[in-house]
Length: 153
Image 1 (tube, rainbow, N blue to C red):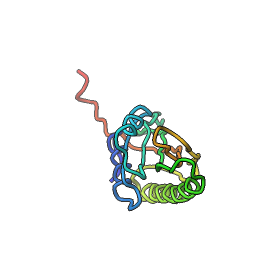
Image 2: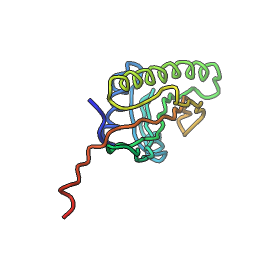
Image 3: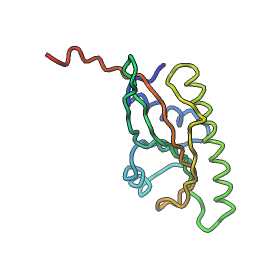
Image 4: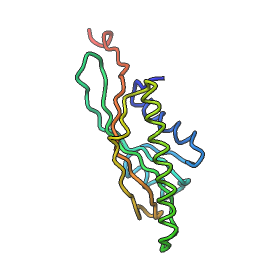
């Protein structure tokens, strides 16, 4: 089913997290939201979807380009470089699973996405939980269901 709202965008990633056998938790929001959860309870590995920037796509329909990032993080043992390296390796595989699923869903018409335009950066020693993992910058284009004719007099 095509994504048609910001809420459906969030739900899509929540569903990705819930359906991937190696992802345990999901959160959407800014740094403050994830840091507040770190101080309480985060289940790892976690898929964190950052708040998107939205740009109107100039064409004949109402569509939006969502520029966002997701992170796949796990809590690493402190002062254990071998464990941190293994986490990075394992989590990078999850990142590629997610990118492949996004490309597959784009190919089936849920949204527009080009995996080759995604950018992956290492995210190490972040937060009080010693999170390690990867941050993926990406853009997707979705249709916006926003009939407005009855909103103006």
